[in-house]
Length: 368
Image 1 (cartoon, rainbow, N blue to C red):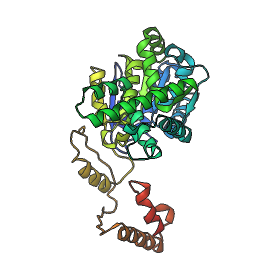
Image 2: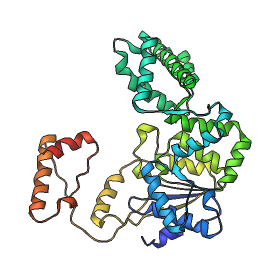
Image 3: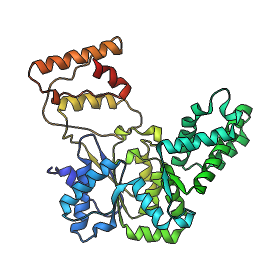
Image 4: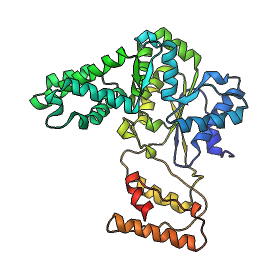
């Protein structure tokens, strides 16, 4: 894809931290790849450019695009979790991470928490409910605490400070469960995914010489989807990038991981963490027609405290239509009739997409 003037200008900013606010469809991945290419062309080793993104799919796409541009390997491109995993394998012993640790995930994690909950059998935690029904909520609470860098002892302090006797008992029961979970993980040499980021942060905060070594290893840090970072990920960027050359790209309008601790405010906090950071805004949407962009902009403009941006596009495209339906069944039937009509008029089925907020909403539409 040929980059436009605003993309080239953003990729070329030098002299300190950079925040790129990239609206939907404006080519943010291409900007990061171009930034990487320019650094390498200027004599920077690809191995010393750290690129962190949110999902494995995004990391693979980013790596492929970068390697096509520089025509060699880009070894330091990955997700936050995969990068933190490598660091802990290398130096985690400084914060008590055992050699040869294994990752605890999925059903194995649920089973461990279930066994501990049954063994504790604390009525303050379970009440009248079966322990099995509370495993997932308890794990979600522990995940969120790790993502927000909240230690278990803080929960204990909250329990001691509240006048709500029932709530205090519940907090103390959670503390017992979480500490039992941590003890068992240590005993079995296990880390869960949120431990990877938490322990990487702890490793750097407690060992300044080690942090300096990593900061020297990666004089350039590029971060994708910054609006989806939680506090542990933000803190990791702050530590490794120091006060040098972080280059972050994101769009507060596209923040979708609040349930994982992400916040649209992360892009604003970047300016506080890196004083003097320069901001570039990408506004030319290369993906959608002008009418789609106008409709989406009119809706998202009602979000409070959003970073101002003006999206623009070329090509009018068909009008955006708004349908109303009495219930989910009539909505699904209307969408199915529209799709059948388009196919009957010669539109390939592969050219028709139905976007839904959740899988639960999509199922009756697919069935219709």
